[in-house]
Amino acid sequence: HNPPPEGTIWTQFDQTRGLLKFVNQQSPGACIDGAQYVCVVGNATRGNVGSPSSLEALESTVAFVSYLPLCGNGNSDGDGIVPIETGLLEDEKVRRIIIDGAKHTGFLPSPGNSIKAPDDWYWYGAEECVDEWAHVLL
Image 1 (cartoon, one colour):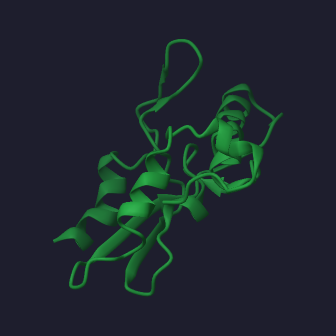
Image 2 (cartoon, one colour; image 1 turned 135 degrees about the vertical axis):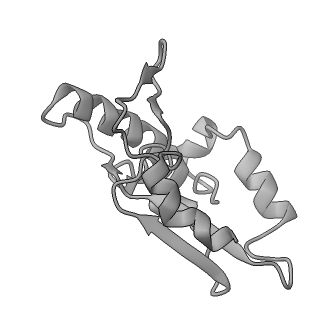
Image 3 (cartoon, one colour; image 1 turned 60 degrees about the horizontal axis):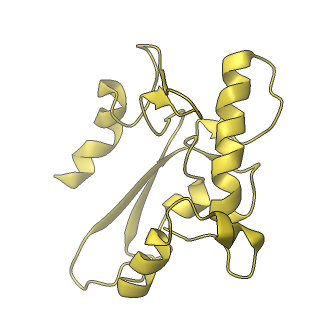
C-alpha cells in the first residue's frame, strides 16, 4: 500500500510503475466511510542475499530485490514479493491479518521462466491458507 520511499533512489525502480502512488493519491488509506477494510499479508520470507539452500537462496534474493524498492529495506519480512509494512494499511479501522508462512504466489518469479512451486507450497491461494483469511470477507 506504500510506494517506494520519496526522496530515495528506489523511486526510480518502482516495480508498480507508479500504481501504488496513484492509488494512495486517489484513495489514501481507509478513506471510504462505512467500508470494511481487510489487509492480508504473509511473513514467509525474509529478504536476504546468500541463504543456505539453493531454493531458499533464490527465494530470499527475489524477496530482497522486491522489498528494497518498496520499503527501503531489503532485509524485511514479507510474503516474498510484498514486505509486511507495505502490505498493511495504516488505519485503526483496518482489519490486518498476517499469515505465518504464507507466500505471495504459487510460483517463484525469476528473470527467465517462472518456477512452479511444489504442491505443498503455502501461499495465499493454497486451500489451507485461504481458510485463514477468506472467512473475514463474508
